[in-house]
Structures are given as structure tokens and as C-alpha cells.
Length: 419
Image 1 (cartoon, rainbow, N blue to C red):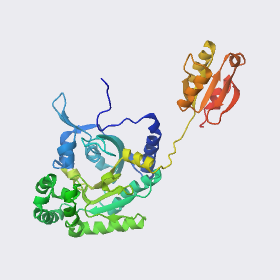
Image 2: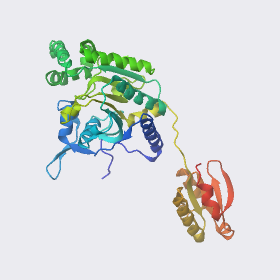
Image 3: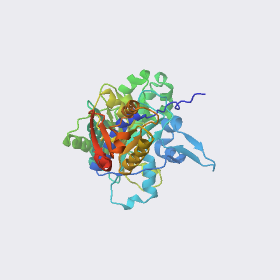
Image 4: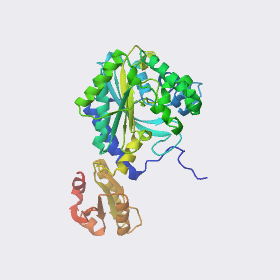
């Protein structure tokens, strides 16, 4: 039997780790610059958290969650998205007593049973942020700017920001009536999913990707044309703030996102020439979610970003990736006495914070140096009988091809500095 990674999952191999370290380091850096603190939630939650928060009529809950009964009879769901768990933690740990708003970020795996395709996996890694406790549109602009600045900082270009307002629980019901009337007269021309959405979740009609439904989506009523006074003011203020910080945007009246908790602002950031199917950043405001989870009314907004898509776009755009490099040393040895010394030097290097590996035993010097190059070592320490007799070693810079002789007592000091 030959085992392979489960469908919809990928291995992040050593040669890809440079991209991943770069992206994750940039995520932490940009979160710090904007004043966000890290939060980590469990990889599984009570299944009801996602049913109540995300919505039991969403595709995520109906088709995509990994839900199971544990040995104690509890129904659990692997983390399907990041916002509901963070809101649960906010309520559970009394974060409403902290100065508001609370700014949080996370980098975590997310699990959804989706049809695997380019840029879409059943397990993917997500960089997400949440701002809880402030309803002002300037916070919406801040969240959008953070996502945009992150993508700029990693080197992506040609990005498109699309925004929309879907109203709130006061003005949305009247809009949904108009939407249902519009789609009801076209019911026989809708795909099967949209026929179901028409009855259970009309707003999701605008999110249909079926080609046969696109003409109906294009001509559907616009939510931004049916906002109440408060939502209309919030919508205008958001666009003003985005203009003030110099972020260009497009208004997409079809943009609704796929989760029931969204209110007012929704947005996406996409790479060039790829369309909405490969959105890198998606998010919005969720002012009613805390109440749905049993808390008091508390506004919130955030986004989720698939890091696999970020890495894929970095490679596609051939954006330069810079990762801090430190010395990695191979101790090459010739003879048993030299091998003992090589073991000692490797240990001393590690104790000083330098990555070090022992050259493969029973191989000649040339073979050990080839192994050092294949292992991405920056330097080799070469020890033979002659070097042992004189209490010295040879240090070879594998990148420059230069070699110098140093005393045994100074070898660690020589290699402890970054390359």
C-alpha cells in the first residue's frame, strides 16, 4: 500500500518553507504595526458555534464542515473559519472589560470539505484579523488597509479591492423582498442551488458562480440602493476614509460573501486577471454576531486570508522573497579521531545558536561537501589528522568557495554571526 496526502491537502516541503516563513513573518509584522495582538483558538469547537454563528443555511455548514461525535457524545466541528471562535473567546474570557475596540489576529489551519481545485484546499492556512467593539466606518477602512498593506509588503502587485454594503437587520428585510420578487419571476431558469437559496437564503443568490445564473445576478437589485439612513451614512463614510488613505476601490453590487453574519461592509482583494474565484482576502462587518452567540450587542469587523493563495501568487508573479539567513554548518571529518572532534564542534555550534549537522560517516571529503551543498549549508568545518595535530580546522564558505584556517578555540566565534 502506498500512502499519499489526503485529497485536498498538501505537504509544505523544505524547499517551500522560505516562502512560508516570509509570508508568516510579514503577517506578524503588519499586525504589530497596526496594533493587533495574537490569539490562538482550539482546532475544534462545539458544532453549534458554527451553525449559530456562520448560519445553518450557508454552504459551509450544509456541505463543508468536518463535524463528528467524539467519544463522550459531544458534537464537534473542526475550525471552519476564524471569526466565530474568536468571538466565542471574546465572550468566554470577558474581553468586553478590556479597552474597546479589541484588535486581534491569528494564523491557523482551517478545514472545509470543498471540491479541491487550484488555490482551494480542504485544509488551508489562514491569516485573519478581528476588531471587536467599534462600529465606526474608520475601523472598516483600517481593516481593509491592513489587508492591502500586507499584500503590498510581500511584493504582490496589480491587486483589486472591491467593496459593497449589504445593509443591516433593519433595512435588509425590505431589500430581500425585492430580491425574492426579482428572482421569483425567473425561478425556472435558476440552477438547483439557487432555487434552494431563493427559499432559505436569498442574499446568497448574488454569490452564485454558475454561468447560467450570471445574467440574473447582473440585473438583480442592488443592496446599496436600499440602505437605511444609518447604513447609508456608514457606506458613504467608508468610501470617504478609503479615499483619504489613498486606497482605490471598485463597488461590486454582487459582492455578498458566503457567511450569514455579515452586515453593512463586505470586501474582497483579488490578484490581477483572476476574477472573484481566487480572492486572496475576504471579509466584512458582523455587528450582530455576538448577540447570536449569546452576548450583548457588540460590533465587529475582520477578514480571512488564505496563505496558500498568497504563496501561489508570489510564485506566479515571481515576487522576490527575502528570509533572514543564518549560518548552517556541516562538520566534515576524515578519520575516527576527527569524527569525535566534529561531533564536539557540531554540539558547541548548536549550543551557540548555530545550525550544525555532522557530515555523513564513511564518506570521503568531496562526498561530504556535496551533501553540505545539497543540505543548503552555508559553511563547512573540515577536520583531518593534520588539523587535529595542529589544533586547527578549515572553514570553507560554500557560497564564495573561499577557505581559511582558524584555531579550534575560535571556530564557534567565527561562525556564530549571521551570514
